[in-house]
Length: 489
Image (cartoon, rainbow, N blue to C red):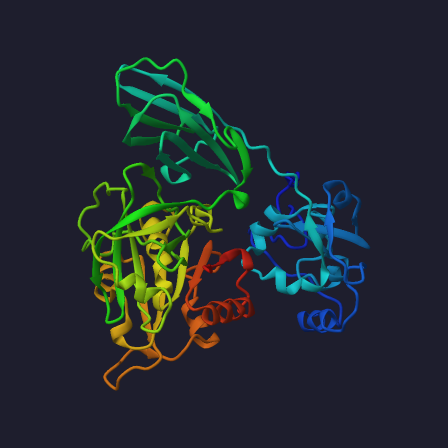
């Protein structure tokens, strides 16, 4: 990790701090306005000194560039040569120099976290920090009684939860994959005696351990847990871990709109899997070997807002639009209750830590792009203590296409922090709401913050053109890349 300078920012008595504790701009030389800077960045001049090359920067190398005429600063893992920007900085040169040759992320966030620095300093990008990966740690132990065997995995990660582990028991072998930061820790053994298919999994968050309790088929004393199998007791980067499937049974299928259905699948008794917020799984139909990614939804919207009860974690719900000429969804729709699909391990880059310090959350969804928003919305309204407002802008073609409209309106009535706005692209003459497609005008009105310096985050999901176009528009509206998550699969 880089050492972040500890002094206050702006520094006491600096040009950018005023007596009241606020901020003020410093006078800039003629020809050093924002528009002058934009013209310079578009001139084709080499502002990095590297002739267009991007380099990987070590901490040692970064520290060398700490002079006004050679000033590199790291912000969120990206390194910029800010020397050309010195005379254009409204806060004065000395404020930039406080982060010279170091990681200025915290200093930047104290004053400028809403600024789209990626766009403003794009032509000054030197490269990315060469960060050494943290060494993941984990180990396990096991205990037994006359009827039970308990395996304890010590993760040393105090925010560990039940969606951090996937457990499968099949043909005498137990496979438990635990996600510890960006690594997957694997416990994989052929057990020395038979156990029942059903088992329990418990996460003890305050000490960072996971307990898997197995039921013995016979009250026999085990001399060992079993024999190690492939990759047992190993760590691999999460992105390199195997994508495994287990068979799930269709237990219900209900119409939600004229072309969208809610599917409920049941995990096998011999599996434990909970899909983390913002992640997706792949469904596979073995008849044609077709595979498609889908994000599960939680049941908090279709339970008519009753007091929440502990859900049966064996159920997984999916909102799926049926395309009559599609390769996958018609086959899925033809499944009968009791039929099976294969369901993969979860994947996805969304980090729940992005939500934990939020004050305002903006959600942009088109059609079934609403599905990843369901869990995000539920988590934010339930577990984010500083949250003041959640706004959902939901794009559809017609009123008939709006998924769970009445439930969303009831939620907005029940929880004053939540607001939903429906936008239709092909409404009837009776429609009194907004209409059209995603646009800068709609977004700029939608994204008005309750307070200028609120901590905000924005999620967007829909058809690929919608998501890509929306992200470009958000960048043009100076929404920082770090404040946006686009759901894609």
